[in-house]
Picture 1 (cartoon, rainbow, N blue to C red):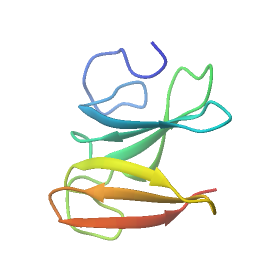
Picture 2: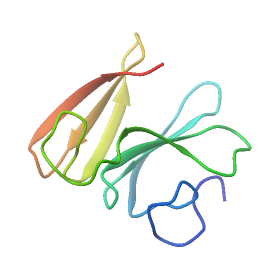
Picture 3: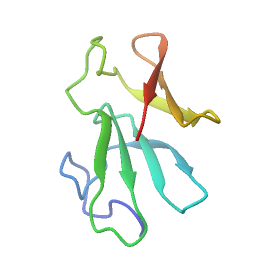
Picture 4: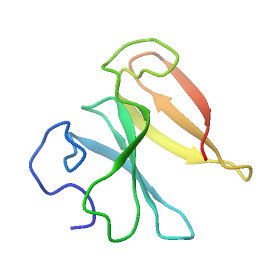
Length: 95
């Protein structure tokens, strides 16, 4: 287990309906969560993740999702998240 595995929930050690993953060249794992309306980042060897976008409850705000179901990065490091319930894709600058 490289992420989650602590039952479904919203703690930083848990995932709730992980939907899509992306692994970068450094082995960092990014998870779009349908259930928690967030994108988490898990570095190699970490025992908990970090919320990098979303996680503010389901909604239509600038940093909210209504079920994050996809993610991708462009060559400049921008994160794109498919927001199923809001019928949109949002772009975020990630450091």
